[in-house]
Length: 517
Image (cartoon, one colour):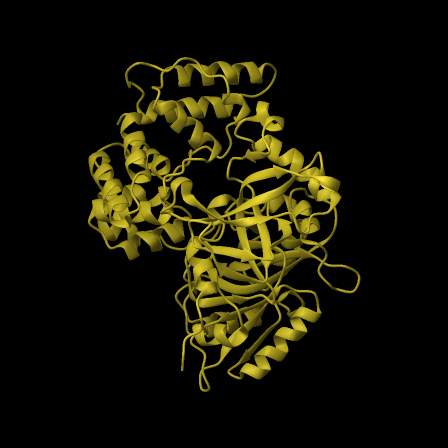
C-alpha cells in the first residue's frame, strides 16, 4: 500500500465531523490491506492512529524545519516508510546527527507535497484528524466483520490496537479471543470518569441504600502496573512504558509478597517525614531515574494471582484477594459503605491528609481496561481538568519577557485540529514556572524563529496542564460554547500526552445540571 493512501484517508477523516463517516473511511482502507503481510497491516493500523511504530526516532520538530523539495508523484510505500524510520531510530554513536539528517532528507525527498506535512505530523505526534484509537478499533471491527467488543477486549489484553490488528482483519473472533492476560505483558489500565460530589459519584457507580460501593483514596502519584512471575518483576506506567529499573523499591515490595504470579494495579508516590504526599513533581522526577527521593507503592486492584485471572471477577472479589495478599501499609486506604454521610466524612479525612480526593468504585464491576465508564468515578474537592496548551502570550508588567498567558484546549474529535479552546490563564504561575514555560513553549512554537515577532505564539498541542477552576459558564466566544471561570494552573503534567487530556464531552458533563428526583 502506498503512503498516499494513508494520507488521503487521514485527510478525509479530518474533513468530516461525522463519527460514522470517520469509521467508514477507516474500514474501507482496512478492507484494502486485509490481504497484506502482518507487518504491513500493523504499520497501517499504527499510521491511521497517527503514530509511528518506533517509540523513539531521535527526530524532533527542529530537525524537520528544512526539508528537500517534494516529489512530483507518490511512490513511497507504507513499508518503505516504516523501514526508513527503523534505520533512523537505529542511528547512534559518532556522526549520528549527520547520518540521521541524511536519512531524513532522503525519506522526505521521496514524499509528495501532501505526504511531507503528514510525515512531519506523525513524527511529532501532530496528526490531527479528529480520530483516536477507539475509532481505529471500530474501523477494524467493521472491516474484519467481528464484534467491536471483541476487538476492544483483545486490545486491552495485548496492550495496543496494533498488536491485535492482524487477528481482527484475518482471524475472526476466535483469533481475537486468543489474546488473554499474560503475566509480564502490561494491559491497558482501567480509567475513571468524574463527578463533582461524593453523593453524585456513588449514584453514578450504582451505589444505594442496599448496595455499598468502595471509596478509594485518590493518591497524587504515578500510576503503575506490576507483573511478577517468580522473581521476575515488571513495572509499567499507565502508558505501558517499562520503568522497572527505575523503581527498585517497588520491585523489593513485590518480591516480598506471598505469591508466585501476580498482576497488581496501583500508584507510587513520595511521602514526607509525616507520611503526607510530597509535591507531584518530586514523584515524577524520581520515576525518571533509579535513585533519589524514596517512593512508596500503594495497590488498589489485583488482576491475576497464582495462575488465576481476576479481570472478569467482580470488584468485591478482587479486593478481597488483594487484601489477603498485600500488607496494609501498601494498600490504598479505602472505605466500603452505602452511607453518603460516612463516605463524605472519609473523603474529608483523605483531603486533610493532603491527598487529591477519592475514587468511588462499583463492587460488582469487572476490570474494564482502557475505557472511562461509570464503574469508577473520581471526585476532587476542586474542579480540575487536564487540558492542552494551544498557544501562549508574552506577558506584561512583572511578567514582561516571559511567555505567560496560556490558551487552554480540550480534546474534541469534531473540531479542526482536534482541540477546542476553553479559555486562558496566567493565574497560579510562580516565577520559576514562568521561566520554565518560556523555554518549553519556545521549543514547541510552530515558528521557532519568529517567537519574538508575535504577541500570541502558537505552539504544537503537546503539553498537558492540570487546571483548577471554580465553574463553567456559557460562552459565545469559544466554539465549544463553554468557558472556564477563574482558571488557574495547578501543575504541568509531563506524565500525560495530549491524547490523554480531558475531552469536551467531559467538560460538558461537568456543566450539566444535576438530574431531578
